[in-house]
Amino acid sequence: MKEIKATEITKTVSQLCQQANFELGEDVLAALKQAQKTERSPLGRETLSQLIENARIAREEKLPLCQDCGTAVVFLEIGQEVHISGGDLYKAAEEGVRQGYAQGYLRKAMVSRPFSDRINTKDNTPPVVHAEIVPGDKLKIMVMPKGGGAENMSRMAMLLPNQGSQGIIELVVKTVDEAGGNACPPLIIGLGIGGTAEKAMLLAKKALLRKVGQPNSDPEIARLEKEVLAKVNALGIGPMGLGGTTTALAVHALVLPAHIVSLPVAVNLQCHSARHKEAIL
Amino acid sequence: MKITSPIETKLIEKLTVGTQVTISGVIYTMRDAAHHRIIQALDRGEKPPFALESQTLYYMGPSPAKPEQVIGSAGPTTSLRMDIYTPRLLAAGVRAMIGKGSRTPEVREAIKKHKAVYLVATGGAGALLAKTIKQAEVIAYDDLGAEAVMRLTVEDFPAIVANDIYGADLFEQGKAKYQKKKRRGKTPLRFISFPTRRPF
Image (cartoon, rainbow over the protein chains, first blue to last red):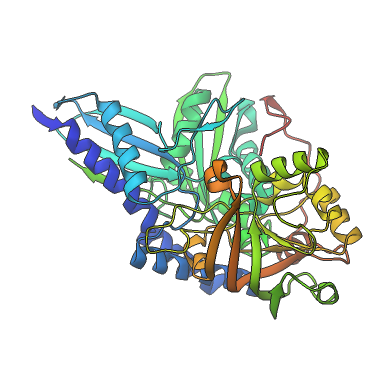
C-alpha cells in the first residue's frame, strides 16, 4: 500500500492547471506546424502562424494561451493499492484548482445556478472530476482546461444500430459543420461510440487526452478515424472558419460494446487550444 | 491595411470581406452581460456608459492581468452570443465589431443598413493579441469582473474583415472556395433521440 497525502494532490493539480494553460503540448504544436505546410488558404496559413506564435509567447511569458482558461476537467486514475491520507480526495483536487487558477492569473469561468442567476464562483471551482480505480499503487492526475466555445458545440445521439459507421460519419460531419468557426478550428474531435448515453460522452472526452493524431490501436477504429477526418476536412471550414483545408487536426475515437438496440455516439469537440497535462504520484 | 479606430465613415467602404487590417486607436470591450445592460439602459432612456457613436466594440473578456501587465490574455469570444443585441447597437451608432465566428442574417442586414463592419480576430490567440494592447481601463460595470466594459488603446491589432457594407460574408466565401465537393442530398439521419435546438 502506498500513502499519498491530500496536500500533495492539491499541489499537483494546481501546477497542472497552470502548466496546461501556459504550455501547448508538443504534439498539438507539431500538428499545427504540419497543417501550416499543407493548408491551401492564405488566411488559414496566417491564422495557423498566429497560433504557433501565440503558443511561443504563452510558454515564454507564462501567459494563458487563451483568455478562456476553461472548466477544469480532472481525470484521476487511482491505483487500488493507494491510500489517500490527510483529507478528502475530491476536496484536495478542488483546492488544487482554486490555488492554480488564483496563482496563475487564470480566468475564472464557473457560474453557479447556470439556468438562472449565473453567479461566478470566483475561483473556477468546482472542477469536473472523473475518478476511476485501476490496478497498481500509483495515482495518475490529468488536468484538462476545457474552453466553452468548443464544448458548446458538442453533441450526442442515440443512433439506430443499423446506421453503423455511416451514421457516425454523418453525425460528426453535421456537428462540425454546424459549429463552423465557433468551436475554434482546427479541431481535435473526440468520438465516443458505445456504452450508454453518458458513457459515450465520457469516452469522447477521454479520447481527447490521446496524443494528437495517434490512431486507435484497433485497425477498424483507426480506419473510421481516418475516414471521418477526411470527410470533416472536405467541408472547407478551415482555421477559425475562414475557409481552408484544415478543419480538424485529428479524430480520436474510443469504442465500447453497447446494448443490442443501441448505438450511442458522442462527439466532443476540442478547439485548437488543446490543453491537458498529467502527472503520476 | 492599417486603420485607426474609431473608424471613419469613408474608410468603411474600403473594408471589404477578406481584407487584413491592423487596428490602432481606441476600442471598447463588451460581452453578452454588458450588451444586456446597455440595452436596458437605452430602454430606460438613459445614456450608455460611453458614447456609442462611431465606436468599435471588441467581444472579449480577458484573463486577469499580473501586477506588471496591462492586461492578461485577450482573444475574441464567440460573436453569436451578441447577435440578438447587435442590430440595436448598430442603430445607436456603433460602427465596428471585432469577434470570432459568423453572424446571423439579421446582423448582416443591420451591418449593410447602418454602414458598419464586422471583423474577426484569431480565437485562442489571446497571448499574442494581448501584446497589441497598450492601455486598458475599466469604464463601466465593474461588478461584471472579466465581463466589465473596458476602454483599450491598441496598436496594430490584427483582424480580418468578415462582413462588409456590401453584404458579403467571409465564412460563406471561404467555405465555398475550399469545400471538396457539394454534399449530395441524402436521406436525413434518423435518430432515436436528437436535440432539435442547441444552445450556444
